[in-house]
Image (cartoon, rainbow over all chains, first blue to last red):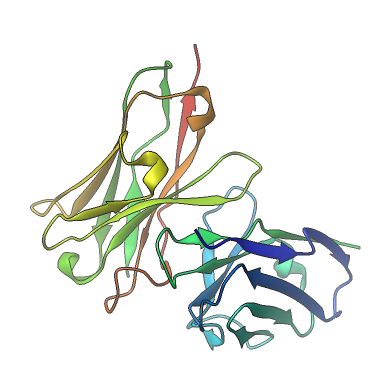
Length: 107
Length: 121
């Protein structure tokens, strides 16, 4: 199974700050890497697929990059509605696996 | 719009079985794979398996293969997950989620609202 490791597991940031979340795969997943946002009590929502393609309706302050084993999710200017948990997921091979999550909290 | 609506919360005893339903609407039922993912409260996400709507073929994560059954009812556009021989650590929110049209793997969008399954004696 491909192991996905996110860092940090949590972070505190202020509104307007730039936030970077990392995701590392235990072996190459090419660009088969996707990002989700999950708010408390809600289902996850797709933000980015294929490493860097923004899902329709997602604000342009979110961006993704990377290929192979190292990926990043960047929020260019954190907004109050962005405080949530973020998960990466690989679809290169089965079983599909997720990172452990990064919780973004208010500073 | 595309929507997945799941059945309500369940409380089960250890050793029992649970069935969770997921009704799809807003798109052609046979176009997209449906995946099942669970989340233990306060923890991360775990992929359980997926079903191919037009054939009913399934693929499960190995550790669930002997306890997990996924089916679909084309007449009602509804997917079902059954987990047998429940254990305390099966307590989780179970989600269905739609995959893309082009691959049996891929990303998930949208997700159902989730069904809490509590295993308690």
